[in-house]
Length: 173
Image 1 (tube, rainbow, N blue to C red):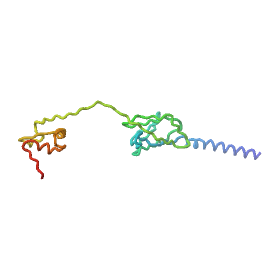
Image 2 (tube, helix red, strand yellow):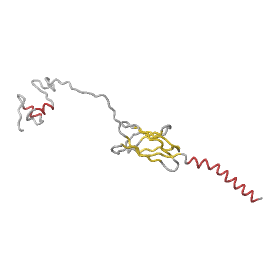
Image 3 (spheres, helix red, strand yellow):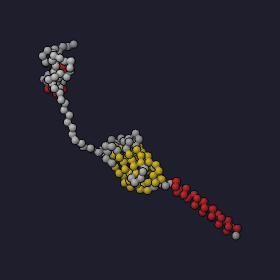
Image 4 (tube, rainbow, N blue to C red):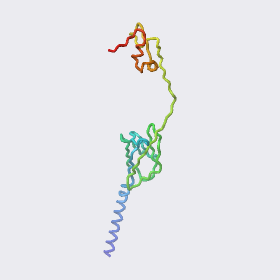
């Protein structure tokens, strides 16, 4: 009789202990970490400041100067990871399995996004009949780089072009 009471008390002790310890053990492994690196697809350089977000949650991170990120406290399950970076196409990595055994390590390659806009034409309004400097009172003439290139024998030298004008001497000083 004492033996049965002892076994019963021992079983009750293990049962109560397991009920107390089970939530503590199960909560310890219900979250995990997702880490990795976001890089440019062509030159494999890390992209600093990229946003890495787990869709459907408020968990996410931004990459550091090397393009590395770390998201902690991710509950176990399957998730879609969304990566956004200015000048690159938004990328979604579907169905990433987060388990309790080990961290998830990702290398995410981003492809550049070409944004086309309207063309802009810039044309200067220069009056070549007037001097560029207000201190030139008698005579002055402006000429462009293109005029320097077109001048025969000028060899892209503005001094040679200027020496062809009246009143300008060119010496070997």
